Image (tube, helix red, strand yellow):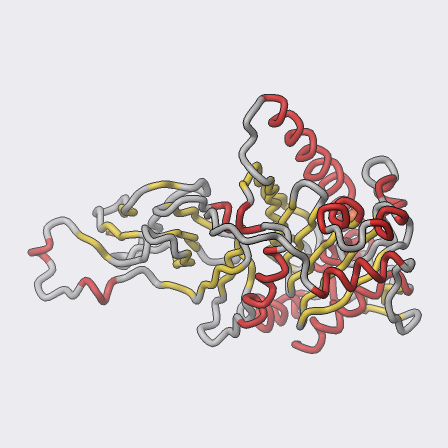
Length: 379
Ligand code: FES
Ligand SMILES: [Fe+2]
C-alpha cells in the first residue's frame, strides 16, 4: 500500500554502522565458538523451535506491497495453517485463518492475490468483507436466530509497520519490536516499494542453515565468486542487534564509504544493509532494489523460502522491465537458489550423515553465534 510521503533519511544506527565500515568494519567477537550439529538434524529440536519460536513470536508474513490496494487478499499456506492475508476497504491489513465459519471449508483457493470487496465461500456462498465480517448468507431464514457477529473469520494478531506485515499465532505476542523496526525500513522507503516478483523455493535444509548464510560475510568472496563476490570487500562487514534481530552492513567500496558520510543515497550505493528478523526473515537492501525472504520451516530438514523482490516503482518501459528481470534472475535464481540455498542443502547432507558433532565458527561468523544464542535462549 502506498504510504504517505516521508523523507527517507537514515537512522542513527544505520549511520553508526556506516562509520564503522569506513574504519574497516569488524565487530566484537568471542573467538572460536561452536554450534551442535544436532540443532539442524533433530526432530525433537524442530518441534521445540516450532513451539517456542514460530508459534509464539511475531513473524513477518509478507511485504505491504503484496497487497497494494484496498480489498485484496492472498492465501498463505507456509506456516502450517491455511492463512489469508487481507487488506480491507479502509486499507487495514489482517491475517485470518482461511476457513469459512459455516462448515469449515477453505475459503479462498490457490495462492494468488484476489481483488474483491467480498470473499465468497465456494460451498454455500457465505460471504465475508475483507475485515473478516460475515456480510451475508443465502437463505438466512434457514438459520433462525443466527447472529452474524458471532461468525467473523478468525483473525490473528496483525501489525503493519515500515512496509512489512507481521502476525502471530499467539494472542499475547508483543509487537513493540516489530513497530520499532518500522522506522529502520522507512530509511529505504520500504512502504513505498512495488512488488516486482515473488517465488517460493522448497529447500532440503534446516531453516537455520539458510539464516546462517545471511548472518556472515565470510562466504561472500568464495561461494559467490562467480556472481556478486566482486561487488564486496572481503570481510569488510559489521553489525549490531535490535532486540533479538540483527542489522548488518557489508562494504561494497571502501573509498566510497568514507567519502559518502552525510550523503544517504551515496552511502546506500556503497553499503549493503541486511536485516535478520528473528526468528526467520531476511531483508537485503541492494543499492536500487530490496529482497525480502520469509522462512517457513516444514521439518528439521526442509524449509520453504518465499523471496519477494521490491523495486521503487512499476517498470514504465520494456527497457526498465528487462533491467529488473536481469536483477531478479541474478539474485533469486543465481545467488540465492544456485549458491546460498545449494550450500544450505549441502550442509544438511553433511550434518545429517552424523560425520561431525559440531560446527566451528570464526570471528567473521559472529552474527551466526548471536543468532544461535537467541534461538537457544528460548528453548
Ligand atoms: S462451508 Fe462455507 S458457506 Fe458452507
Ligand atoms: Fe550468500
